[in-house]
Image: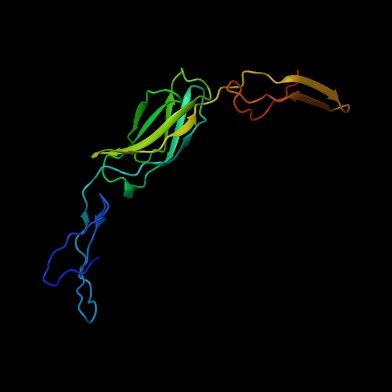
Length: 194
């Protein structure tokens, strides 16, 4: 803080954060040094403002067939700038020009799930997450690409064969399923005896 002329009895404090409680003290100074500070003022909360900090770490994916799961890092309370805080989620299929908008009216929220039977498995979506409060809508994050949920594999492994290795053991082998939009990520195989 800058030193204020000794004949001045008030000052404007700037660059404070919106919707935060502050208390203030005043100290007197002269050529000899600085005196004791005053007792603290009463707590004073600054006025609310539109939030300016967008959520970070926008990602998602997973979920069930026909779902788009979107996640983000919540905005801390000291950056919410007012009451009525929540999130705005906008998304569109990659290559589309029309955005879908959803409002998540929870301060603690960090996830939104969009369900629609027309979503094909592993479809890429452009996603942005923003913020709002009672003062208005704030910033949106930059675009992230998130994939819709997978479906169960639609293709069976090929080339299954069995080789007897002992009286009690058989070795079974097969060709792995290549990744594509119809198979998704193959996390494992199950060998069944008929």
